[in-house]
Length: 139
Image 1 (cartoon, rainbow, N blue to C red):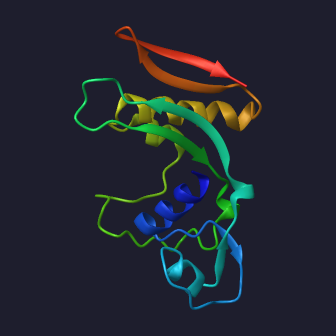
Image 2 (cartoon, rainbow, N blue to C red):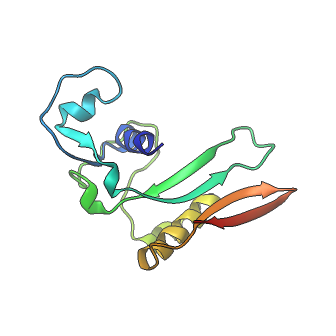
């Protein structure tokens, strides 16, 4: 899952979360990543939350959320969206949390803020149980 998060981040934003590597000509989903002279670096990722979309939604997800320090990016100023996202921008955490966002996104941003000062707190697992939103914390 972490590799998927790194690849999706690259595909949707152009941001490379990786370490330097000799450029290589390879086929498949990592082709552009390798051409940019990088290999994925999962050591900079922190797994911070899991959430399952409530039943009855048109599209359901069992999502895992990760965060990484900006120092883990090859070039944080190089943002090149694929067109899948409406807008890509770096924002202070408080500004991001003030946006009109889905509840789970706001929750995860709050979790991110907490982890900056308490990195070893238990992981939240958000889901619906018998019609009620439940947040379980797991080690």
